[in-house]
Length: 454
Ligand SMILES: Cc1ncc(COP(=O)(O)O)c(C=O)c1O
Image 1 (cartoon, rainbow, N blue to C red):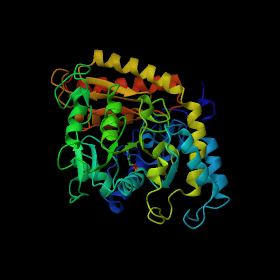
Image 2: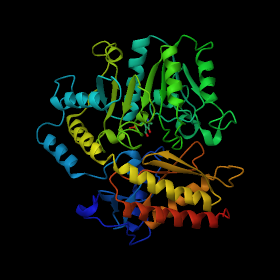
Image 3: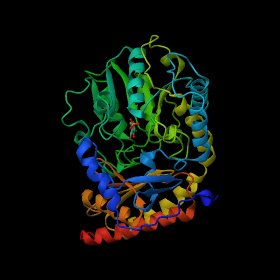
Image 4: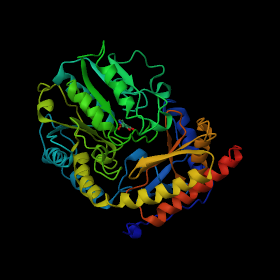
């Protein structure tokens, strides 16, 4: 498949070392007027983005393997989606669904019912993944009338108070913001590379899931757990995909204890793992799916889609918001669903190329400790030595910055910030994918050498 013939931007191409002079001026202005709570990952000011490329104000063209943190699954500004949004702008921009419903909101809810696994029939749309998580939990509380919520220590579920209460990583997400929402119990994820129980898969028989059952079925949680919130593949946690059979085991714990299984697909959803929703890689039907990011390819939208009996419990007027499910965002999302279905099959090529290449690096470089992921959601964990597995956090950041200087945007993640994660657009062609991986390998080799880790 050749998706690239229409792109006007060509790259990657560095014309001046980033940040160039125009970017520097804008970044200096930012220092004076934007809160320090916003941390800049890659210091440059963007001008135009198209397909897999972004051009900064100095004329540098970057290849984007961040997808705006897992959003642009079909590349930047796909034509059909921009047109759908523009058409809606020409009709009406906002009214609020609580004032007057409009068809695109309802059509999107109908589409979500069709594409979600299992029998998830009703939806609500919000402004972001964070807000969608909030709403999913309000709905689960309303349905179960129970208190406790279980989530993973290495998870990430957003930035509101509820979301940071679920998220386990203290710095930078929770530190300084306490007290958080009570009745949240953290448990350990199936992080096989650093097994919390010191076991190995498959001989462990998924003992980590049995540990979770014990926590849930023992005081003070026993009989009082409302929801278990999971990411089928942890995103910010470092692209950690649990082994086969794991989610089936967690689902069974939820069934045995009348717990709402909330599947946070904000980062994994919309094709990233090769299925529309990552949970479809296991034989599990969630009770609620939370979506965001790729749902609307850059228009701000979050969704909660769940079983009808659960979604029916919050009383009228108890959920909503002024902008949630904005008509322009719904128009974009309807187009996004069509486009995502078309590019899903390309994830096989991405997975094949990345798996081969990353595993070659694992064999060749001492610093590549683990290679993992599903579909087009692949990452590698950098360590100081393979035997000691000491997280190479500074190296991961150095590799990210070196890639940036060479014209490639990548992200890091993980409990220790030492995972390099790859979010290329799902419709990238093989040549460009390889070009990006070549840049990444040269950055990895150079930076490991500089750090004396080769
Ligand atoms: C798994 C997951 N849930 C929720 C969120 C929060 O979404 P948003 O940033 O749109 O509020 C994110 C964002 O990265 C995420 O990765």
